[in-house]
Image 1 (cartoon, rainbow, N blue to C red):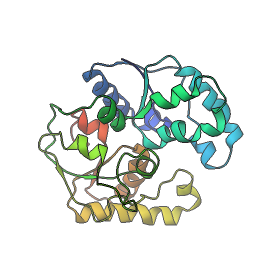
Image 2 (image 1 turned 30 degrees about the vertical axis):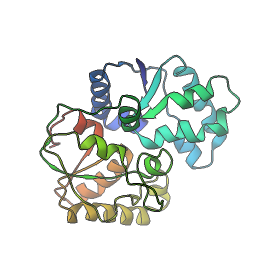
Image 3 (image 1 turned 90 degrees about the vertical axis):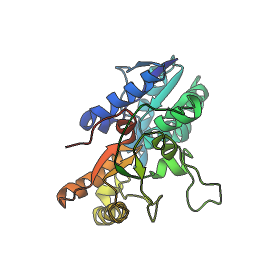
Image 4 (image 1 turned 120 degrees about the vertical axis):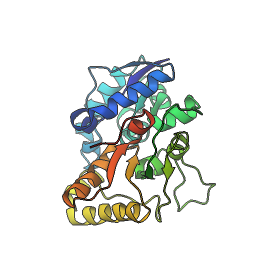
Amino acid sequence: MKIGLFIPCYIDQFYPDVGMATVELLERVGATVEFPDAQTCCGQPMANTGCWEEARPLAESFLKTYADYDYVVCPSGSCTAMVTHHYDHLLNDQPGFSELKAKTFELCEFLTDIIHLDKLDVKFPHRVGLHSSCHGLRELGLGRASERMLPDFNKARQLLELVEGLTLVELQRPDECCGFGGTFAIAEEAVSCMMGNDRIHDHEQAGAEIMTAGDMSCLMHMQGLISRQKKPLRVMHIAQILAGRPLPQ
């Protein structure tokens, strides 16, 4: 199984250990992982602000870069959703695009749906709150959004339940947005911060030591609020927990 590792810009620049933890997880399940040097931004920031023509060359480059892999795996719901749900606007008539969509997966989605992972030799004796990001829930279907009358499920929770000693705390609003939303956090700073503080408070009242998510962008937003307020709550990407990383200092 040959995997092309798709790493979001902010992970590459600010949180490289999340990328390394992802590699370790994928290699443990027997995959050969490659990090294509030609990869760039997927174009999501441009698309979010309506600059579709500026995003087009990045989408075309992505298609060319990942054409020869069995799977493309990314530790981010929002960047994965850009490829699988929004490249239609940019690449719909391009040869190989339908194949690209079918083989591109968010990390938790890949581990549950393709690998069918049911065992982990990892210990993490801490109370963890799971933040389910909007793109993961409402575009990729990684869990049940509360507005939909479906049986309850969550692929990230399914994986965290394999970790020995980990206690998942119960949130009052388990699928509420953190307020990041890329450029929304810049254009609507006050609203964005209030939404982030609401999510942090929900995790605090549940007794979480660690907030985790499949999107480091959400965690980056809330980590900024946590550090400015000098709260003891810490954040870790789910890949870091599943790979057995220690608590951050």
